[in-house]
Image (cartoon, rainbow, N blue to C red):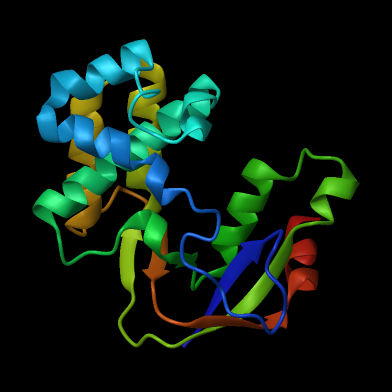
Length: 198
């Protein structure tokens, strides 16, 4: 199966890694807090009480990244407890099957960066050895981000996670394709990305 992936670090011809930045462990304190109850999770958010339970790197994250990992932790908690047959978001790789989605991502995250930074981004064709990857609506995860950052609404985050893993969709879904199976970058198509965003 041929899909697409945008990256600063992937090398043509190399196998992609699951959890390549080793971030999964940073979600676990939030999972454990939710196992005790939503109040424990909210206390952790309010007080930043992660230092006793996680590697030092979580304790030193800025507030925005700390909250982003809390969202990933909430999604992982819902996946473990309600959708155990679904893939863990941080233990897989992400792709799109529609190049237009990369234009949106690039414009949201990179278009305003200096040319030197933009030049680091590459778009690849990926050969994925998975006939049935998981598809979820990325906009439901974005909705969870808004609920956390704007309102600190943990219940809304958990609701988004349930909708996400159950296959529900927003009004204009953006389907991210996830797999933990072998995947390799087989062609650099960055020139196509550049032509789309210029």
